[in-house]
Every structure is written in C-alpha cells, then in structure tokens.
Amino acid sequence: MKVTLESTTKIVELNGIQCRVWQGETARGVPCHAYIPLIGADKDFDTSEFDADLQERVAPRPDLDVIPLRLLL
Image (cartoon, rainbow, N blue to C red; front, top):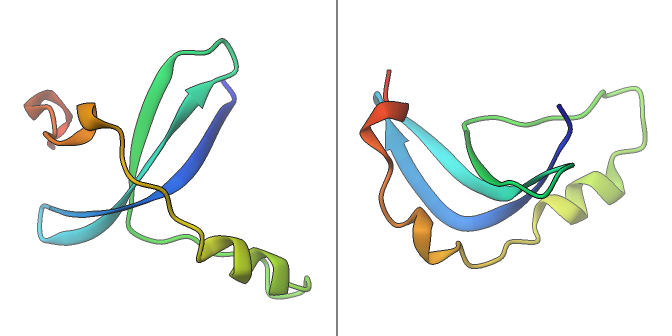
C-alpha cells in the first residue's frame, strides 16, 4: 500500500505519547490518517529540504476531531 501524508497542526496524546496527526490518502484515493510520534531522515543525506518541509503544516480535516476508539491499543 502506498499512502501520501501531510503534517497537520494537531497533536494528540495516545497511551502517554504525544503524536502529530498526519492526514492524506492511499494511492486509490481512500482518505486516511496517521498518528506519528517521531519522524526522521538518514543522517548521511542532506536533510535541509526535509527539515524545511517538516515545518509545513495544514489544518486537520474536520473528521479528525475525534480519535476512533477502535484505533486505541
């Protein structure tokens, strides 16, 4: 599965860990979201563009206001 995600301004706490909410869609156009606590790039590469892109954030979609309980571990 391929998923394209973009960082949102929303941060939630899941099981005591702060996660940024990312939203996007699958290659077939299914809307999805991810809760990501950490993200990084290989230190052997020039990460200046990665670092700059990581600062870009969008407002989350309205459907991301509530975390579905089925997603909690």
